[in-house]
Length: 154
Image (tube, rainbow, N blue to C red; front, side, top):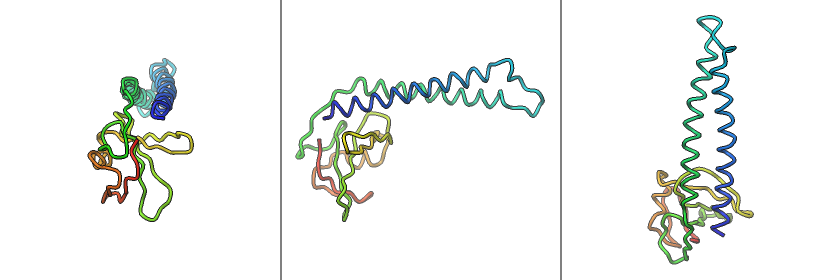
């Protein structure tokens, strides 16, 4: 199951990287096109395209680094009596709710949401406070903020 999750994450990141790289290339072309030369001192189109291209190029580098992190990850199996650590897929429940929330303690790409079957899984990166709060916890433990009970670890 975790191998499938990792492949879904890699596929999503590759798609994002491809789309963003094309957009960055188009912005760079627009910024350097001789036809986009300023027509007056108030015409800032070329400058704006340049800023956009620079920002998108930075995002392309970040996405490529995220993808590299997932290319190097080796899935580890966890049991419900194991301590939560990096690479764990954690099932949680809020008090009074039936539907479980799933979090994957990932090396990067925090905030990315992917579907594995009918389960929506949110990636948590090490910078995330929730990632930090989950580390070292066990099935049955409860978190104060956000109020969650850990109902399973994979």
